Image (tube, rainbow, N blue to C red; front, side, top):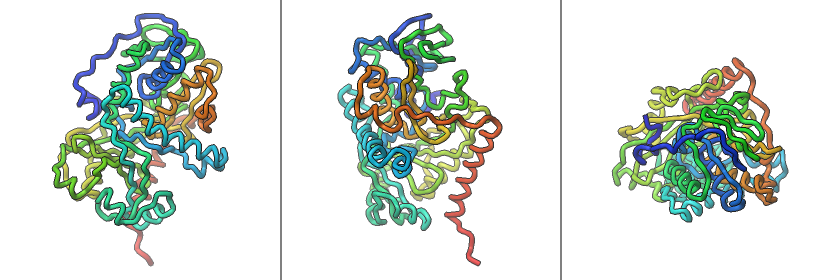
Length: 424
């Protein structure tokens, strides 16, 4: 089964050959998604003399990079105020400026390499559709009133919104598969169908042999939990998506999203959507359960109740009952403190924990890892996420109980805001 609408538009994927046995490289990258491929891409610019191998369990883009909502955004899971308290205002500002630049860099790199990923930088709108949501929105930078919010996205019950220009809609699978082709053409060896089972400084163990390398890079995001000794590093939490059939011009004339702005609202449970280049609504959200022991299985990609909830949300937001053409999902990686990180220590490098905001962040991470591996001191290598270490998640069953309780509590909070208890 093709794991997303995005990948289905590319036709059958023929994986590259697997690792042909034990090999040695200067840099070995575990993971053929955005993080791993951007790292290899920028290494080919700043350190072209290094030999690089990318090791991927299925095929490049099989994971989150080929399934996500297609938002290249300047969002960061940790708010700027919290970052400022921890690292200082200047560092917090630098982190968010670097992410905003990464949104543009994704577009620049795709254009330079001839990757047609349907990149459209229209920004993003978070709608306020209840009094409680409006109160939150008014406290945010970028607040716009109801008239301006509806001019961008004319959903139902719009009271206001928060607009940011730092977001582009794109076709994520076109980006990741195109990037893999570019990386291979620039000299990296990509081995698909090669599952990494263990990582350590200087050594990557796979089901097809062992790779020794001067630098080993962990770029597995939600799949990190499958590695020996890493089950509690990142919690693999599922996000699910649907895509409608193409919608008529009359719908778009009413709703807007004329510049393909991405959209969400101010509810607590995360939802996200975009107008695709072929005029569908691609729409997703959290709410699927976390699975005991950080298990990852293809069957978890599909939860009928969550798909039904996503369709109901589209009906509620836009007053339509659209035909749903595609349903899919997949795991994303959540660190215990929700703080993504990038680092290099004694030949072992890592990046990830994007909490679902990884399309642009992975580009910034790849550039940063390339700088670190090449021994370059840049503004990127001084950002606050560099060298950060999140504490591990709690052991089971505490992890299962805590994450799923938080999901249920989030759903309850949204329900109470939509239908508040009557005054006494």
